[in-house]
Length: 188
Image 1 (cartoon, rainbow, N blue to C red):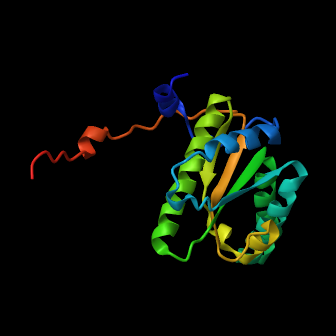
Image 2 (tube, helix red, strand yellow):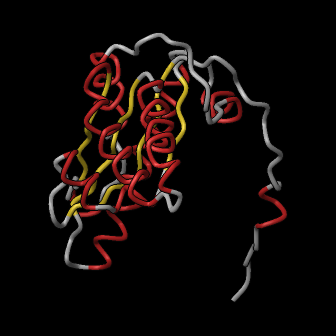
Image 3 (spheres, rainbow, N blue to C red):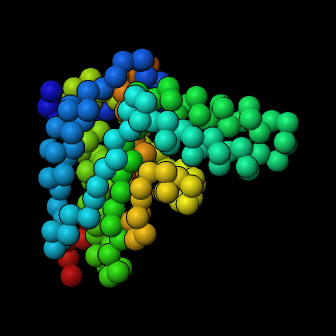
């Protein structure tokens, strides 16, 4: 498949088959995805792959956070279980983490590079019949989640990638043509 076709056909996938994605395949794809431009070669990224029973650590943390934030005490267990089950149903979750440089310019460049890895990974996965969605939820910042996942001070979580073989592929959403957003300056 040509890159231009791959770019246009890739979709964010929210529903997955109950089929495991091999960790070795995800690792292989990440090993290729890291070939991104990175100013000063800081390479600030790391990844946590949660799959199978390994997702319980995250699911338990999220259940706890959802239960304590549920204002209706009679619904706490139900709310927590709903989120627990949702996480456990995802075939694989890859948490993408970036070391935050104290220099704000380098930190911004590192964020851009790490985001490019996520996009590269999504294209490489799509090429292999694997879908994903990049999720950023408020609880990624919570101490309960960070502690459960071993995220250190000075590290930023860019998001969780929900990864699996698509059960349903969404239709394309329209894009505004680039030409409508391009300004050409040809004279001083």
